[in-house]
Amino acid sequence: MPPRTTDSTPERPDDDRAPSTDPEPEITGEREDGARSDSAPEPGVDQRVAAVRRAADGGRRWRALHLAGCAVLLAVAVTGGAIAVGGVQDRGAGVDAMSAAGALSPGDLARGDLDAGIASLQKHLRAQPKDYGSWATLGVAYVEQARTKGDPSRYPQAQRALKRSLGLEPGNDQALAGQAALAAARHDFPGALTHADRALKQNPYNERALCTRIDALVELGRYDDAAKAADTADDRRPGIPVFTRYAYVHELRGDVRTAREALERALSSAHAPADVAYVATALGQLAWNQGEYKTALGHYARALAADDAYLPALEGRARAQAASGDRKAAVRGLEQVVARFPLPGPLVALGELYEDRGADGDRAKAGDQYALVDAWTALARAGGANTDLETALAAADHGDKKEALRAARAEWDRRHSVHTADALAWALHVNGRDEEALPYARRATATGYRNAVFLYHRGVIERATGDERGARSHLKAALDLNPGFSPLGAREARTALKDLEGNR
Image (cartoon, rainbow, N blue to C red):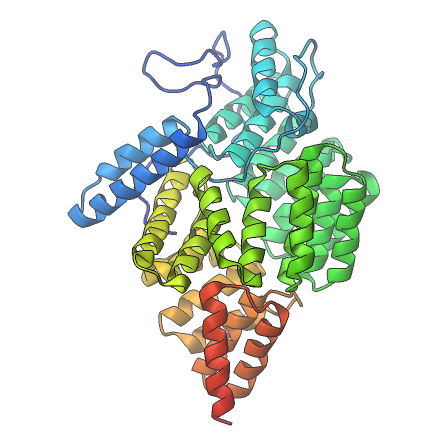
C-alpha cells in the first residue's frame, strides 16, 4: 500500500542498549506537550476509525495539491494511537492486579483484560521500577495491544520498556523474547529471528521465543526450517500458541489434513473464550481456503459464540457468506467490521463486493474503501511498521500500479515467502511484465500451498505469456478449490477460462 507521507525514522526494534536513567518510568499519562505517555487512556474505536477516515481525506488533498499537510495529520493521529493495524482484542477473564513481580505473565495478559493488566503493571512499576521482569511483561503487553487494538504508537513504548528490562538485567530471556515479538510485529523478520535465537540460548523453553522463531522463519520463506522449529516447539512447549503455528506450517506445505488435526487438537484444549474464538476462526479460515463454506460458517459460529465481537471471525463469516451467494449478509458483515477497524483486508473485500454488486453509488463506495487502505498504510508506516506487502497487494488491483511494483520488489528483497512471490508476480503482471512475472508465480505455488488466489494469478500470467494449457489448468484449479475466492477475481477467472475453452 501507497506512498510514504512522513520521513520520520522509527526506532530500531533491535536496539537493546541501556535505557535512559530517568528516575521514574514514563507511565504517568499525558505529558505537558500533549503527547501520550505509556499510561494514557486508549482512544475509543470511533476515534481510531475517525482518524483513519480523516487521514484518507487528508491523503487525497495531499495528492491533489502536492503538499505535505497529510504528514502532520498522520503524526497527530499516531500520537493519539488512532490507527488500525491489527485484529480485535481477545476478550477473556479479567486480570487481577499485580501484587508482586512476575505475578502476571504475558500469556495472562493476552488471554485477559489487556487494558487492566497494563494498568496493573504500570502501577506496580511506579512502586518497583527496578523489576526487570515486569518491564519485559509490559513491553510484550504493548506489542499485544498494538496488534489487538490497532495502535502501533505502542511499538516505541514497547521498545522503551524492553530496553529498560535489559538495562536492569542484561540478556534476560523475557525481554529478548519480547524484542523478537516486537520485531515481528514491525515486519522485521530477520531481527525477530535474531532476538528469538538469543532468547532461546538463555532459555530453550521460552514459549514466546519458540513461537516467534517459527513466525519469522515462515515469513522469510524458510519453510523447511520452520517445520523443524515447529517440531521443536511442539516437543518443548505443546499448547495452543504452538499448535496453531504447527498447523500453518503444514498448510503452507500443502498438508491440509495435518493442519486441520493440529487445529482440532488446539481447539480441544481451549477453554478461555479468547482461545476458543481464535482457534475456531483459524479452522474456519482453513475450511474457507478449501472451498468448504458450510464447514467454515460452522467454525465461525463457534468462534462468535465464544466472543460475539471477535472481528477476525466476523470478517471470515462475511467472506464465507459472500462465497456462498449471500451477498447482502456479507456486505452487512464487512461494513460492521470496517466501521470498527478499517484494515486493508476487509476494506478491499468490501470494496470488491460493492463493485460486484454495481448498484447506484457502489463504485464511489468502493473507491472510498480503497482510499482508506491508503490512509491505513500511511498511518502504519508512521508507527514504524513495514507495510510493503499490503501495499503491493492492494495497489496492484485498486491503486497505483507502479507503487505496487516498487513495494513488491522492496518486500522481495527482504524475504522470499510464497506471499511475497505471489505479490511480486501480480505486480509485474499489472505492469505488463508477464515474462518476468511467470517465475515468481511458479514459485508462489511450488510448496503445494492450496491457495486459489495464487492459482488464479498464475493462470492469468500463463495466459498472457501464451501458455494456454497451463492457464486452463491453473484457472480451473483455482475455481475447483475455492470458487468464491474473490468477488471480482473469481468472475474474471471464469471469464478467462471460458475464453480459453472456446479457443481450443
